[in-house]
Length: 196
Image 1 (tube, rainbow, N blue to C red):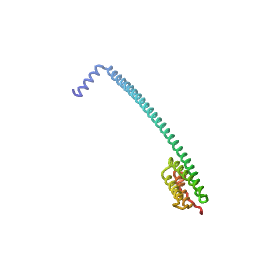
Image 2: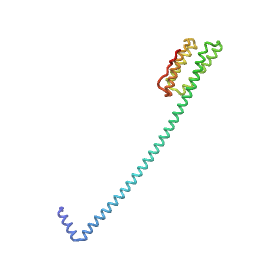
Image 3: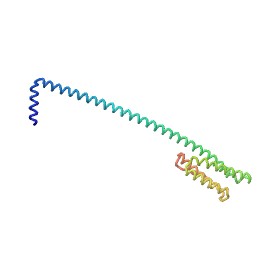
Image 4: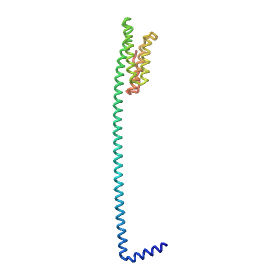
């Protein structure tokens, strides 16, 4: 059947139905549009509901991840601050120990032999204590500066090197600069600018 024949049959059917056919055709067009609109609204509503579910799920996931990150950040911050406070405390104890050691070295030449031996025993105890305090908390470059100072003082006690305050002061300042760098106090090293 050709399209002309189909058109002819359609015309005959519409003609036989007469005005009712036009009404049925108009009514079916209206009902079809109404039905299509309702289907479209149902799909749109279903799509909107699914979109809201996805949005809510994504927001919940983001809030959970953000809460976990905040918790991790607080834990890291607290741990970092505690470590920093502990380092400052260790460095303060270290400074006290080094001050005692250097004061004893400075007065050792004026002591009687028995007192000098006692000062040497005190030096040994203090340097071992200082090493233990530092080794728990500080980086290797601070330990290297500490070791250079203490090794020089040991050489002095053994009589291998004579006591020279300028050399001891230089090694002490090197140690202090390593501490300042580790604590991020100031990257600029300090230096002795006195006259002695």
